[in-house]
Image 1 (cartoon, helix red, strand yellow):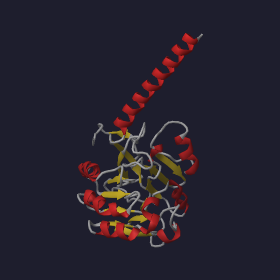
Image 2: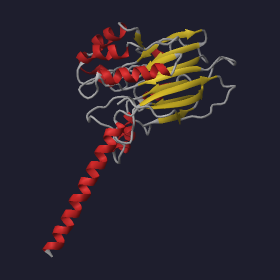
Image 3: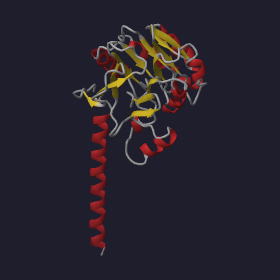
Length: 289
C-alpha cells in the first residue's frame, strides 16, 4: 500500500513538473511572439471610390518593470513596416510609474504616418496623476492624444477619441460634438466598454485593455469577458458600428502571456461599395524576442 502511494506521488510530481515545464515554454514563446493580424472592414460614410485607409493599431504597451524599451522599439519598427496611413495607440502607454514615459516615447519616436500618429489614455495612464508627464513625452514625438474630442483628417473623414471608461470621464457626446452626422468616423477608446458610446455615431472603433486575457486559460478569459460585456479579442458589432479589440503588446500584473500573443493590427478601411473580406487573416508570424 505504501509503495503504491509512493508511485502515485511520483506520478503526480512528474505530471506537475511536466505541466510546469510545458507552461513555462508556452509563456516564454508567447510573451514576445508578436502576431501581425490583417483585416479589411467597411467604414460607413467613406466616399465611394476613396482609396482604402490603412490603420495600424498598437495598444497596451505597458512600458514598466516587465516591458523594456528595446522590445517596444522593435514593435514600433514592425508597425512602421506595415506602411499605415494612420497609426493609433489605444492607451496604457506605461505601467506602475510615469517615470517610464520618456523611455516609452523614445521607443515610439520612429512612428509616423501620412494622417498622423494618435492615441488615447488608458486606465494605467490615468492612475496617480501620470497624464501630464506622459502627455509631455508624447507631444515631444508628435503623438497627439485625443481626450473626448475629434479631428478632421480630411474633408468627410474624422477621428475621435474617448477618455478611459474606468478612471476618467468618458464623454461620447463631447467626442462627437464636431463630427457631422453621417461622416466617416474612426474612433479610439481604450476599454471595450466604451463601444456603448457608438450608439451616438456610426463608424469603426479600435480598443484594447483586455490583453486577450493575457493568460488565456480558463477562467481568466471568462473573468475578463464579465468585465467587458463579453468583448475580449477580435471583432464585435452593434447597429452601424464595428469594434476591434486588440490584444495589446505588453503585460500587466504577471510578466508573461499564454495563448494570447501580442498583436499589431493592420486594418484596411474601405468604402461600403467594396465588401470586406479576409477579416482576421494573419500575416506571416513575426517575432520580436
